[in-house]
Length: 68
Image (cartoon, rainbow, N blue to C red):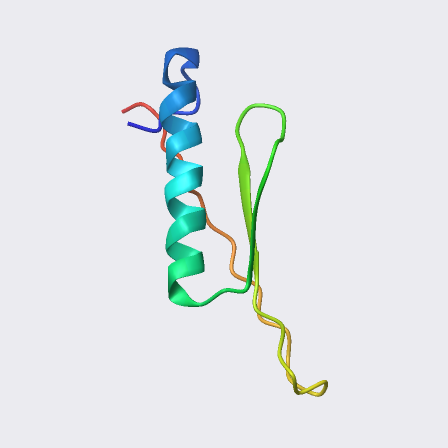
């Protein structure tokens, strides 16, 4: 489990970030990056439009979980 609040799951959180980055790339995102941040890695993905007038869409979510 990718429980980010528990240090013993650091490897799981890292694998979660790698999995998400790979899935985004498989979906077609031309840019996917894993950013090292304090506590847990963040996943960034970008799919720029060739239409300069296209709106910007931002999606924000979590790939880690908290203990229950």
